[in-house]
Image 1: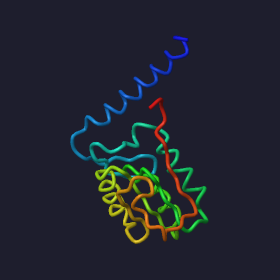
Image 2: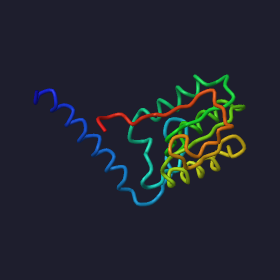
Image 3: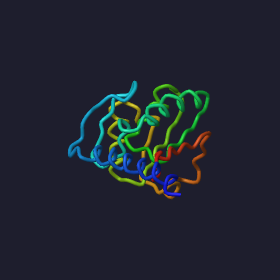
Image 4: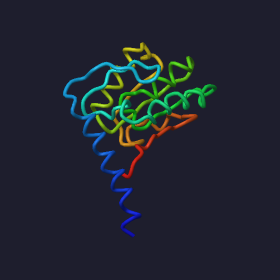
Length: 148
């Protein structure tokens, strides 16, 4: 039984160390993740740390190419919402996060990419602050990987 648990604990420890390293930055900074330039705030999920953010940004943008309305839950820096909007010039995007700093981070990145006409961001616990009138072709929620 111990052998089955040991790799999971090791993975959990490694995941925690990566998240700790990401949170050590005390000020916002600008970086490039894949094809997207981003500002990253402290205490916001950092897409540089996990390869899945870059992959999702690229692949989800292709999957929703003919859609009109897209929602991202847990937007963090906004990388996926921004990638979707940049690669799909007619899509409307709503990005949400429970973390107020993540919403501010996403808003800054939306403005930086001049996407304010088609991309909005709001603080919400899943659908709590999303208007019931909103309809989406796709709702995307990337759960962080790891034994969290």
